[in-house]
Amino acid sequence: MNRLPGTARWARATLLVVGAAGVVAGGWLTVVAATFETGALGELILGMLLLAALGVALFAVLAFAIAARFADGGDGVRLGAVAMGWALVVGSGGAGLAVHGAWGVGVAVGGLLALLATREDTRDWFAARPKAPRG
Image (cartoon, rainbow, N blue to C red; front, side):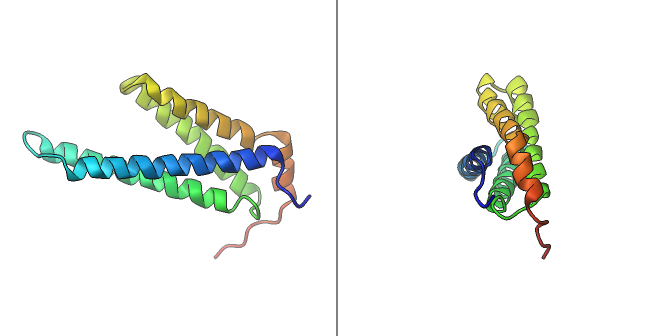
């Protein structure tokens, strides 16, 4: 089997969408932080905005890195995609409870990613791949 199965291709596409959304969200948070006027509690809010931008950017980098290794990676890459999906479900679910219900989209995308990465044909394809070299 030289070609990714359909579920693995969709999982990789989902990771790319998550990464792109992370870049957009991180950029938006950075712009908000840069234009934020400090006042009472301003430094605290500014720090929280920058910390959120850093977290979102890290999440985007991880999504792009996992997506880049899909074609030649072993089962660790698939497990990374599953972990990324569940992290998105938990993080978006928590944000949805605390802030706004629109975070339900993140829960749905994370669940879809975890589902696609755990499908039988995706598992079989990754199990047949050699372990990715370290370095």
